[in-house]
Image 1 (spheres, one colour):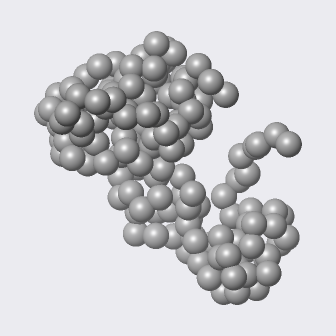
Image 2 (cartoon, rainbow, N blue to C red; image 1 turned 90 degrees about the horizontal axis):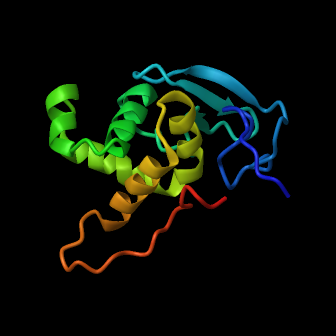
Length: 152
């Protein structure tokens, strides 16, 4: 079976709902926007709400996705966290948290970074290697949890 991306608002995220994960059932309606301007949806069956960013690395982030992707692309270019903080005004800890949050979504993020930010495969390999070693003090490398850029 091939995996594919579905548009936001295509299914209910509530595991207790009879329409949970069923695509295009017509049970979702637009339900306003968050303070950050992200579209919200409500299930007509269970009345639970979710946002368009649910299930993505951008879920719960107050910063727009373009800025997050730009910071990740800068990391792929081997720009330091301190330099990103100086240039973009975003705390180093915040960018590091985005990086950790993005790691499980490596394949989808690679597609976005390759398409929009002119990042090469070698730079992405370096980025995911950086993610794998981030936070280590003993020098023992972690095993990568995401899909490396060469794999599919």
